Length: 123
Image 1: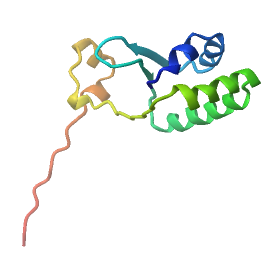
Image 2: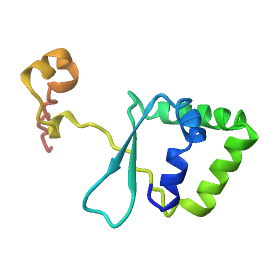
Image 3: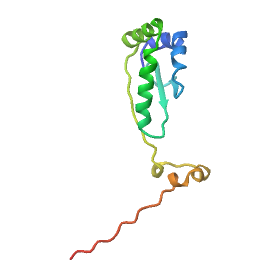
Image 4: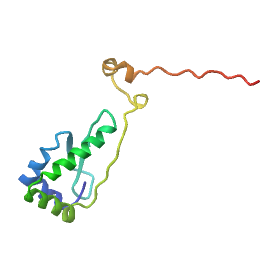
């Protein structure tokens, strides 16, 4: 997320009240190397189906916003948010370099058995 209004929105008590209702998200501010304010919001899930659950829970939470909270979110979306982008990534154990201790915690995931291709014969 980026935009000039984020500072006003993020510093308000309304934002903190809203953000506390989404405990599965971690947010970080980029403080160098960008022309303006940029925030990253991360959510970790064990399966992609949980993204659907989180979306439904977010919609339900938004339905419970007070008038003040709804107004703040609408104002932020209209005046403060320059852009928003969503990316979904999957952790691939074959492309990850982790310590032996981490591998030992879940060997079925981190050290999967390789499937052997069977030779086929042509008639």
